[in-house]
Image (spheres, rainbow, N blue to C red):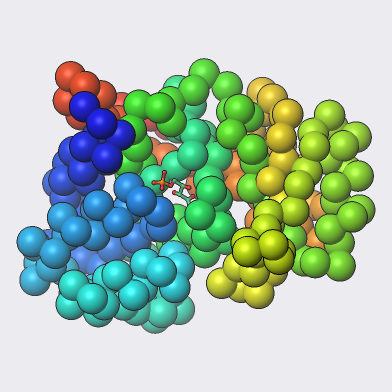
Length: 225
Ligand code: 5RP
């Protein structure tokens, strides 16, 4: 089965977590795009969604789902999003689509984080995927040196030869060569560095459930705690 077919499979499976009458949180990325396609078939069941990016907002509106500002909604029953890596504790690396800050904000509002991913995202230890970090541009060089001191090589993400600008008007560093053995401690440490907007380790906002696409079908992994 192709990666795209696996994404479509987990996207459809995620509909089971959409509770009728509840506003849901929706992530960003190609797997989430498949979820939004699937959501179109049941869009009348929910009053709307809180979105994690401009791109997702456009797609939700295109299928007729009202999009609420995060400040208008207190709690979301579920947040559905993809990941760049997910480990056996439900800790993730996210931000390959540069939407990590809003993703973490919406995830923090949800009672349950359902991660939808194809099996290529499953890892024993986080770090093979270059870690995205959203940064304030004036802090870029110092933050690169701080990551170098940890053994990482941070590169400024470019788009069309220019620094990529996020939905929040900031830049992204992609940090190669890290092995993140203690995601909770690592996330707390990097979040404390001046100039870091959001680090792409999702340990404090980890997944509660992962729907993993495999050639044998969808594997549902519930994380303890
Ligand atoms: C966007 C993300 C995505 O969830 C992550 O990059 C996975 O994307 P895809 O489903 O396209 O593989 O964190 O910021």
